Image 1 (tube, rainbow, N blue to C red):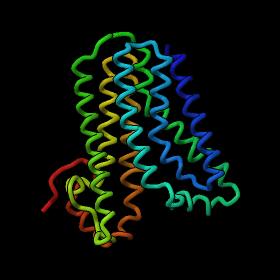
Image 2: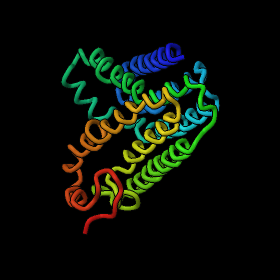
Image 3: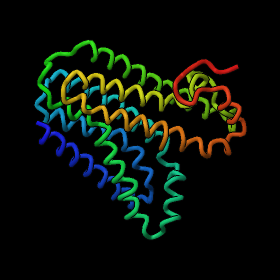
Image 4: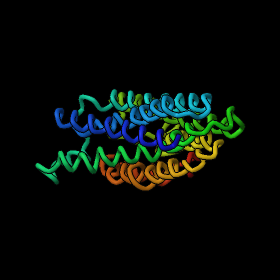
Length: 259
């Protein structure tokens, strides 16, 4: 039932983010929220699998899709970020708010992330309440294919970037190889595909279709808020050749580079 699934999901993600906030205070590192982001979706998916009364095969498929995506993302970010100090965004907030930063971060960082996880994961939550159809149809197949494309873009793109950065000869240079030749943000494009794929699986159910707000919010975040726009505000200053890269390379959807 919706009245059981949605409150359970909300409570789970709220508790996780609150616990992460407490840990961030102990470690003086609000960047932990970025690592927990993917895992928070996995927790929501696990909760709705347990408390939902919808078709088992769909609940299991959606859990697998979210778990593979979320655990890969959290593992990668933990490997990349832990031990390197707090991200510059949170350092700037800490400097701005001073002694008020702990409370501000609880609301603006961890609380907001909890709300976003809840909203973006609505397709998974709502589909878990639908008993019909009991099986999977063509739309679910399309969703899985789209999800596979997204996970592949993220995994390959992250691996290519990590290999590029590991080579000291590339210090200060712009990554324009592999998938990065066709889109400046293959990982964000991957997230986009993953969540529209998850929605497609959920949309075979009546309640799941109302979850369209989830991929819409994720797309807005990636394209207009915390994804492309935020990252490219400063990267041009740190990478002298980035303006030339921007001139010929798609910002989001992959396409051959301009001549």
